[in-house]
Image 1 (cartoon, rainbow, N blue to C red):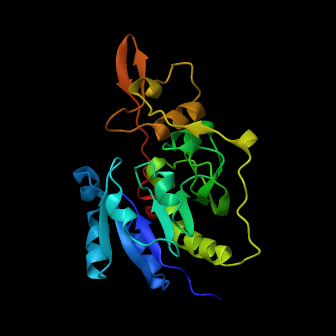
Image 2 (tube, helix red, strand yellow):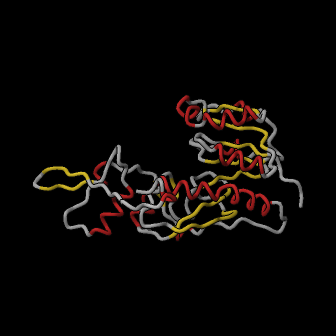
Image 3 (cartoon, rainbow, N blue to C red):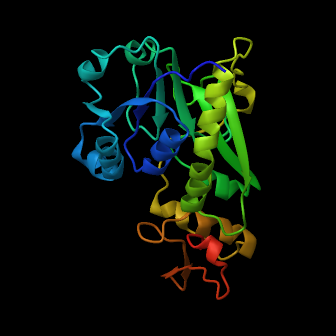
Length: 256
């Protein structure tokens, strides 16, 4: 098999486990790219420290200034985005041998930033997709996908955890596929696509009294217990709805 190309790893969150797994696979991560925003530098602190440990060059960019990354040779490299919060312009991603993004749903369903619609819809399956970056959000051709079951008590946090556990294998297999000259990424079927770019509001967590328990459970799972917990109204008073299980398996530590 041909040697895997060097990778420029872009993120703004704690993707240190993914980065370390890719390094353990023998992948050549030559640059880690982080937003200049202090908010994302804080969120990605573990990635920054891991890059320093492995003597990987760190590059900082902003939505309006990609000059430091543009100076770096990228013709033979792969751009790999893992929860990178900025829209990558064509003058940047177009320079790479391959420009790829990891998306935590089974595209073309659930394009966008939010996973709550998976829970509201009551989907029994989700997954993670490695796709080609193009000019729009999450619309590029699919390189590889991996699937996992969605449990009754899954939340956004657990969906992200399950997707994250599959990411190293997803990237490794995707890179192997791209080395095959006969392989072509699969264009997304726009007729099957759905997009969610609007953040849920507290009003979305309202559960009318007429709602069945199973439908209410979907809203509870999709609600943030801190910023917008699920609630109903009884005699005009707001009542918070929480779900607790006395015998929750330890493997579901971050489920409700």
